[in-house]
Image (cartoon, rainbow, N blue to C red; front, side, top):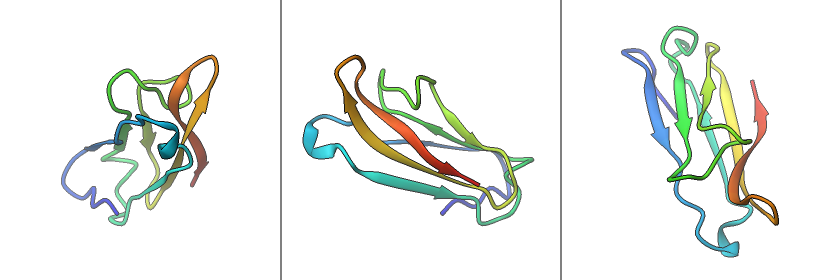
Amino acid sequence: IVNSTGSVITGTLPGITSHADVGLIYTFKDIAGSGSTNNVVVEPSGSQKIDSAGSAKIQTNFGALTLTAFSSSFGGFNWGIVSTT
């Protein structure tokens, strides 16, 4: 749960270090209703990516972002966006 009332908020996901981490799910939610003005920025750890990008953002008031950890033969361990609102 993120209170974005005062400013842009940036959070960093934990690093995915083994296949035991695959399937972890994190949801970020703007509870203040100011996500369109003060975005909630989510960044992966280290060189990992979120759907091939360096970050993902909640840019809507009361928006939410759900991500899951995955492993692929071509990209290693990364994060994927499951849903947004």
